[in-house]
Amino acid sequence: MIRAIVLWPDPVLSEVCAPVAQIDAATRTLCDDLLETMYDAPGRGLAAPQVGVLQRVFVMDTTWKDGERTPRVFINPEITDRSETLVIGSEGCLSIPGLAADVERAEAITLRWTAPDGRILVERLTGFDAVCAQHEFDHLEGLVIFDRVAPELRSALQAEYSQ
Ligand code: NI
Image 1 (cartoon, helix red, strand yellow):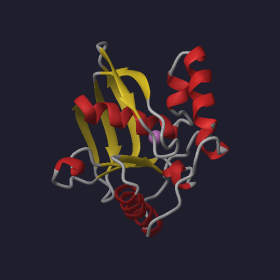
Image 2 (spheres, rainbow, N blue to C red):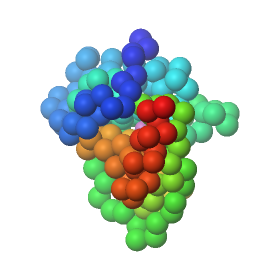
Image 3 (cartoon, rainbow, N blue to C red):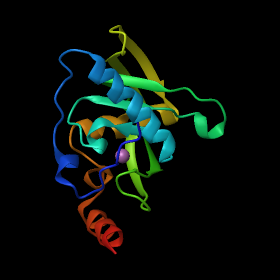
Image 4 (cartoon, protein in one colour):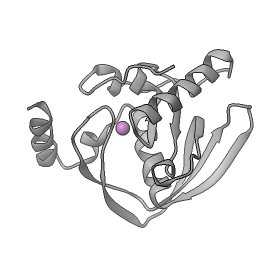
């Protein structure tokens, strides 16, 4: 089911999300809905708070816009390592439509998470996968791209967005 995407500055986007205590039918429905909503939007990543659910879940598919679908679901993700090398790239957000901002991110991260079938997985992510995962992980911490830019730029961006 496609769910409504919460738009900034809805306060739900600034909340820290709670871990998923037990993966049940509702969790799996949430994961399916997040993917369906992300593809419909259309976007390459979507986090649970963006549909108003304050749980530590996000989905992403960084390849589908170039061809093949590779849907991925991350439950209770943890970033266990960040490269010292940083990259700056332009990022958009489905909760802040029409706006893009240059954000600095680690070039590579190690992500540990639980899959919908309960397995614990660990993977080193690089390139756009790493950037996208850090953006979605931020949503679970109540952070959006506005929180990742310098204060002066933030003011300018927010002014641009509210027009
Ligand atoms: Ni976003």
